[in-house]
Image 1 (cartoon, rainbow, N blue to C red):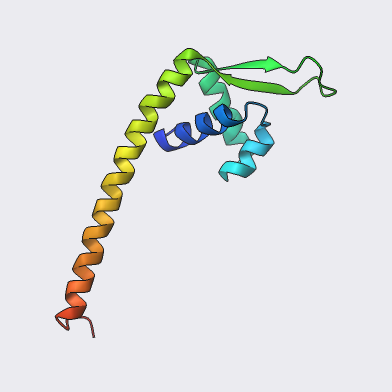
Image 2: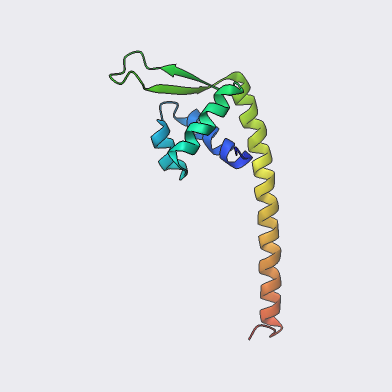
Length: 110
């Protein structure tokens, strides 16, 4: 499944370095090569990226994955959603920390 977080990370990595191989993306993102392949194909299918062969590459199987205008727009949207979700998670963690601190001060956790 291509979550917002994974889509954000893939689009960001490809925007910064379109020449990353699927194997490099797998290592960078900490996901399996098969999952990277699935995600790349999903992004290609919906037109968020396009694959271009390297013209001067020794490895004729090498591709550059370039964000399309639709991909750039989608990256902005997914980045906003991802940021809002992370901010909500951060606020929840802050509340939890404050509750634990309060319990320690009240002597409830001894």
